[in-house]
Length: 127
Image (cartoon, rainbow, N blue to C red; front, side):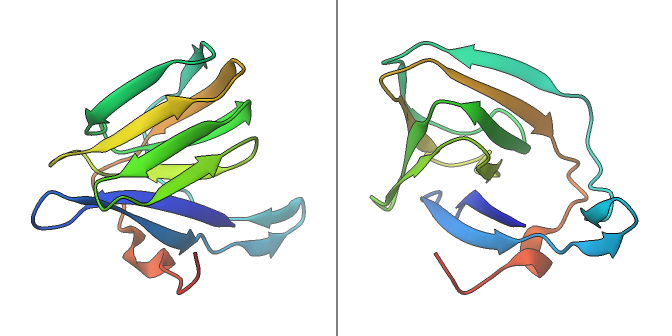
């Protein structure tokens, strides 16, 4: 399963990184191992909303259900995320990222991730 990680380098500049969360075949389809976390946050974001550079408030998966968001990292790279996209917001220090809401309301869920989770084994070479 593809995911995109936003992280801060040693200088505090944020970047995107492609991840491939491994799945194993099971009786109910493909499934990952349990990723430790705590709770879930449901959010609606109004059309046109934006937030200047800010670090993520916690390590968290952000999954867009409806609508889209544009994220800009400190290195200048920009990506859009829409329904079904999974982002690991892992830039809890440094400059952070910019979030820009699209022309419609966005519905998303946030799943806090334990500090013990090591996404380095999920890295890919792709975008």
